[in-house]
Image (tube, rainbow, N blue to C red; front, top):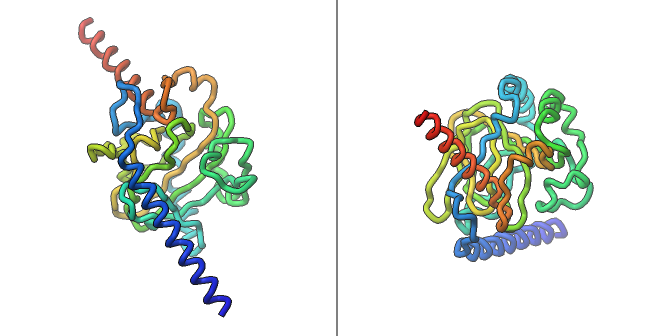
Length: 266
């Protein structure tokens, strides 16, 4: 009897959580936060110019073998709450491996606070990946996570959080371009697929997800504090800090276009 009671309680709790999230999404879908007028969604900022792409691509077989060996393990299911649709699929089938662990109860707002994260046991299985991560342009790092799926499931379009004045500094990266990962403008449903091996993007004012695809795929994300050298290149908005990556992407495009125009005139 106690087991039945516990199962019922878990089911009721899960249902209540789903209904609460659905209600919140319904409200969020009617709120359009103000952003800098130079920003155009969907967008992302490629980080390929700041990282060793050749070294990253060289980890493809290494990671594939190690992740394949984990298929029988009970790795955590990838979960997202703020899906585009109120009752969107929150556990699409992919798995996660946290190479760092939180020092206190997990709170998504803290994912890039280096003081609250430390290297975990899982990191021992991926020493070459950790060696690469240490070359990334961070002053200090916090959460380090691998997301993988050997069955090509689609990732439901979603936001990471709803706080427009909270900007997480992170680098999302991958060893191959197999996964059709995209950014989505929730107001126009326009998609932009990421063509680079690495990126930083606005996770609040737009959505992100991935289409169903053939074969396995895996991506990594490192959160933390960018290096001082990198921060000098970032255009920071005076409001809606969550849109920082989108503004940097917009101003970078403008600078490239202006440079191309000057070259053509020359």
